[in-house]
Each structure stands twice: as structure tokens, then as C-alpha cells.
Length: 161
Image (cartoon, rainbow, N blue to C red; front, side, top):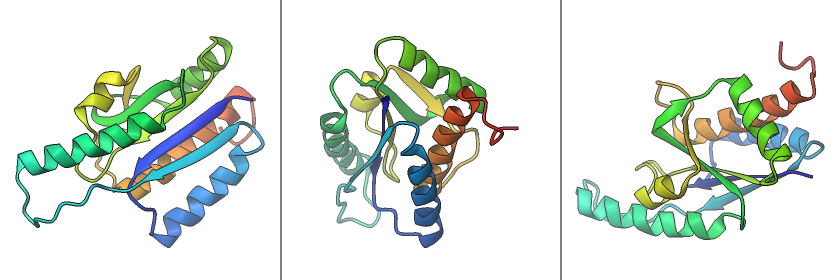
């Protein structure tokens, strides 16, 4: 069974997002080995921290992210400069990985400060959920739904119309 990981920095504490993620996580359980890895956001003591402080925090988060990626997994970084991807393109990515020998996929969502440069550099692919800005909790819900939709597209389910 294909292993799909969603590695996220920060807690999911909005009830509506948690309920949605839980629903799609349950649905995905029948289709793949789906796992969510929730990592702590690096603490920044200063309210208006400068770039160097944020970079150190991102570096710390990046190390934790890379340590959480399964060996041999295809790493997909969600980032602003990533390529916008359609539902069908995501489904094709999931299918290609399943057939291509590197079936495991790790999707990564960084913290509110973004994603560490070392994670972006290690990623096999950088994608974007579009040109809009989403709160990280909502991005987690949207990505979880899109992963479910990718499996629905690949199985020709009526979920994707």
C-alpha cells in the first residue's frame, strides 16, 4: 500500500479544520497508508523578530522536517514559489509515484514563517495551492482533501466530477 505522509509545522487547533482533516484522513485510510506528522513551530521570543531570528527558527524546523521524511520518499514542498498544480496533476503525481518504484510521498507544509531553504532544496518537487494566501491550518485541510481527491480521480470515483 502506498505511503503518503503530510508533514506539518504547527498545531491544528481550529475545530473546523481538525474535523475536516479527520474526515479525509479516515477516508484515505482505505486507499493508502496516510500519516500526519505534526512538528512544533520553533519558538521565537521576539514579537517583531528580524530576518536572522526567523532564519534560525526556519533552519531548526527544516532539520525536524527532513528527519521526519521516510527514507526514499518523494518529497513535495508546498511553498509560495512552487508550481500551481491542478487536482488532475496531483492525481497523476500520486499515480506515477505508485507505479514508478518510489511510491512513498511526503508532502510538507512549513510554519507561518514559511519553509526552510534546506527543505526546498531537498524537495523533488515544489508545488503551490494557488496564488491565494491560506492560513496554514486551512492549507492542511485543503491539501488533505486534494490528496483524497487524487485517489478518487485515479480510481474513477464519482467524488471528482
